[in-house]
Length: 327
Image (cartoon, rainbow, N blue to C red; front, side):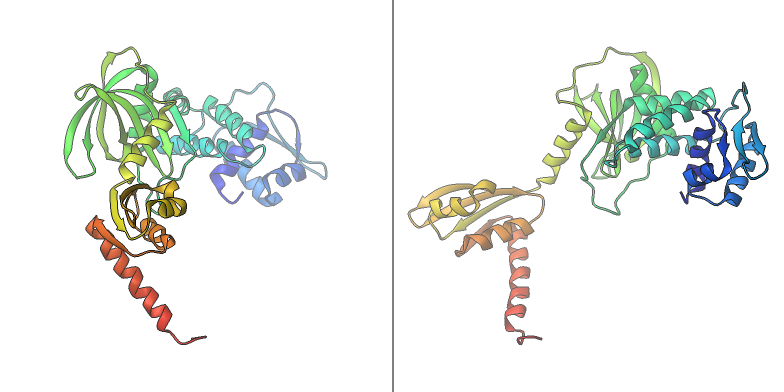
């Protein structure tokens, strides 16, 4: 456990059982040396945790019996980091990690100051995890901790929100929303809510939300038109990603084309020897591959970008074909 903060939380969790821990066993649990363990115990004492130590060959550590734990000394950003980290671990596929993470989050929340505990508990309760990597690596968006926990509280309290939102095209507008749930999907956070001005459900990227504030007006939650909030966000992203409407005239019978790529396209008969193929795709590389599999000449009808991609592939294949063997 190389991360000091995570190790300190684990040490605190173990000591909260109030059992006596032999030093060697405790160090082994934390995967640290005896010296590092002594240093971590010293840090806990500086924070006000009454940890007793017994010296000698059978020496060890124990939290003082009957002692009341002081609040965990963390700021707002650290509290959010703890909650988000443990929630992510709770979705881990490693056996035993999920239950341990849920228990750890509950324990840590108990020793946080009341103000932070309320925010962390709201964040845990109002977040719907999405097990889908919709966002490419390296494109994670930064979300201010105050925005994250503030929106979570509004979701939990069924309080209408006003905020400024920057759309994908860069335009900014004021929004008035009934917040429903937060969704952690891929490497981004989303708010799912009912937009009162547009009279419809919407999803909002949290990194594009500015100045969220509760109006003090409560509302009765509406029924979401999806299985859950994560499914709603995924459906919206899928629709946005399918940005290309591909249409191609293929010099082959429709039946032969359907046999090759019918699962991924719609084929219309033009005449006995030709057919029109339609696809929707978020990337133009897939249509090029599919058309190559057909094994027939074709004419690109739309979009123009597909013709550019075919030319690019063609240049690379010609270079490969003209290269000397073994070279």
